[in-house]
Amino acid sequence: MRMSTMELSEEDRLLADTARRFSDEVVIPWVANNRDREWLAPPEERVPYELLEAVDALGIRTLGVPEKYGGVPLEHQALTFAVLAEELSRGDSGFMDTLAQVWKVSVLLSNCASEELQDEWFPKIVEDTGFLLAHALTEPRGASDRWLPYDVPEAAMQTRATRDGDDWVLNGRKHFITNGYDAKLYVIYANSDPTKGIRSGTSSFLVPRDTPGFTIGRVHEKFGARFMNQGELIFDDCRIPASHLLIENDALGKAGVYFQPGKVLQAAKNLGVGVAAYEETSQYVQEFVQGGKVLIKHQVVAKAMAEMATKIESVRAMTRLAARAVDAGADDASYLTWMAKVYAGDNIFDVCRSAMELHGGSGVMRDTGIEKHFRDAAIFLHMDGTADVHKFKIAKALFPETAAEYAGVE
View (spheres, rainbow, N blue to C red):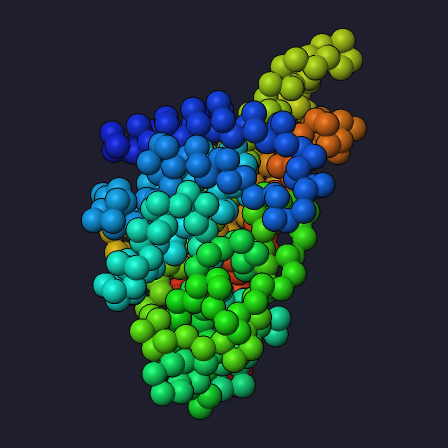
């Protein structure tokens, strides 16, 4: 089910074609040959560094890096990310998750990091194809609920940052962090003003992997997107120089440059999983014979395939609308990205469930491969914020004067 290139620029069409060929010729065969690696390899041997090296040769691993450091300038950043993420996630969503963090954190650093920090780290990111980045917000005692309008000190992050002379000292714990087990450089969010809540008392810091007082805990073993390792981060009197402060106290307010394209990427990655499931199912129903005729000739199968295709196209349209709003700096960009993320999560999960069911008993067998798309799609229901919290935020954006706060005292 080839993506629509209507209204795409010539640059994005070429990038989409390049990414599609890469998935067809490199990623999909690699995944087929590494089914055991997904489940049996230890975490430190699971990440597909081979694919990161191969995609680097295409010039798209470091899209978020400024041009002066060797990155590629993009006219429509969010839309380009969406187009590429759809095609690459069609190959494997875990691989795309790993790559997406490099894109997003690079964009954040290019907007928030000092020139000295950029001079230090961007060359390393460009030179090392295995240089992974991570963005650490989630904690054991709070995640999506932190985005509700309950902005009081009691709801602040548990990870704390304290100024001590020329240093900041971090103490706390993060978990469920994408690339957390493998990254070489981390953006860490911590409460830097105990008298304030999360919106006005959170700072962000740049922390290298080998910093004393910073250790990597366990990997979080999940049943989908397994070629990306989530990890636990532990800070015990972790001392970093004051120069590694990115944003003081207003870190979340100024991180829209990361969050908005991130929601678009989330929807687009999810979309790619659905497209993969649909394409494989399309081939199956036109080849497998049941009841004396190929499956597609059965009305119930034809109806299911039509519904799957309709959901995929509607998710693609919603994702591109949100991407264009982000690129244009539109006032409605935030809630459109939330809508795209939630809409993609629900609909692509349905697509992958239908794909698995149309394969009959073979659908749940690992050898067939269709069950992997179902597992990967289920992960998106829980990544980058829960659906319910996103819906609360959408309602508050649509009805700012009358919608309830949904948390705290009215």
